[in-house]
Length: 485
Image (cartoon, rainbow, N blue to C red):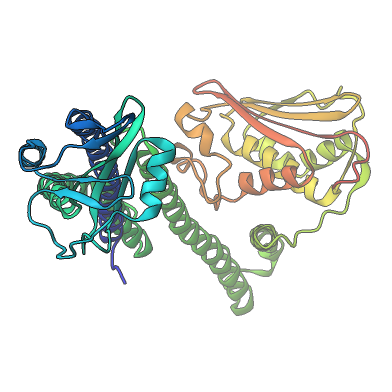
C-alpha cells in the first residue's frame, strides 16, 4: 500500500506511460508485420510472374500439334541456370512445376529429398482460378518450415505449360521485427527515463501544496492558527489554499473572541456577585446602617437583573447552537413594544441628557412574531444606542409599516463603528476595540443574538455607520402571519 499521494500519483502516471509504450510497441509490431507481409507478397508475386514470362520462352510446340507446348528442359536448356540466377538475386527458392504441380526445377538446397515432390493440389487449383497465389505456409513434401510462397502460371499463347513458385523462409520476418522492436525499445528507454524525471519533478511540485496543507491542518488541529499557506497560481489548489487561509483567519478570530468572551463572562459574573455579596454582608453585620438598606438593595436588584440577562443570553446562545430555540409567533404591535422597552432606560437616558425622537409620532405596526424574542432584540439595540451615544446626543427610533413588512430602525449619534469593523459586528463574541473603553459590561453576544433571532423570523438586520457621526441598526419583520416560522 502506498504511503503518500506523491507515491500514488507518480506510480499511476509511470504505469500509464509504460502501458502506453507497450501499446505502441504492440501496434508497431503489428503494423511492421503487415508491412513486411505486403512487401513480400508484392515482391514475390511480381517476380513469380516475371519468371513465368521468361520460362514461357523456353518452350516448343508439340510435334504435329501447335496448340500444345512443352517446356524445353533438356541438357542444352538455359532455363535451370536462369532460375538459379534469379533465386540468388531474390535470395529465395525458385520452383518450376508442370501443370500437375510436380517439381521440374528447384533451385538452392532442397529441404526434401523426395524426388517426386509436388505442390499440393489445392494450391494448383487456386492458381487455375486466380492466376496468382500467395500464402505463408509449409508444403509437407517440400518444406518442413513455414515459407512465403508466391505462384504464377506459365502461359504460352493462352496455354498453361506449368507453374512458377518463389519461396523464402518466413523466419526472416521475426528477425526484421526484432530489429525494429530493438530500435524502438532503445528509444523508448531513453524517453521513459526523461519522462520519469519530468513526472517525478511535476508530481513532487504538485504534491508539495498538499504536504503544506497537511502541515497546516495539523497546526490548526493543535490550535495554532497563525500558519498560512502560499496562494500561488489560479488553479484549484491555490483556491483551496486561499480558503484554508480564510478558515484559519476566521478560526483565529473566533478563538480570540471566545477567549475574550470567557474573560468578559468571568468578569461579568464575578463583579456583580462580589458587589451583591459585599452589600449583603455589610447589611448583615451592620456595616451598612438600616436607613441605607433600601438604596443598596436597589443596587443589588440591578446587579441580579444584570446577571439574569447574561444567563438568559447564554441560554439563548446554547439553544441557537443546538437548534432548540422555539419561536412562538403571535400578533402584536412593534411600536408599542418599542415604547414600553424605552421606559426601562429612562434613568440612564436622563443621566446622559439624551434626546429621544421618532417614537412619539410612530404609527401602529402590527407584526406576527415571538414577542419575547423580539423584545430582547429591541432591548439590545436600544441598550447599545444608550451605551454608545455621546453625552447630550440623540437617539432616533423609526417604525415604518408596509403591506408585507415592518421596518424598525435605531439610530444614535456618537463615535460610530469603523468601516473595517462593520462586517464583524454581528459575529459571536465580537466587541469593537474602540468601544471597550465605553462598554465595560458587554460580553459580545448581544448583536449575535439579535441577528440570530431576526433570522429565525425570516427577517433581516443591517448596520450603517459613519465614524464620528452616527450608527444605525435596521431590521424588518413580516407584517402578517407566516406559516414557515
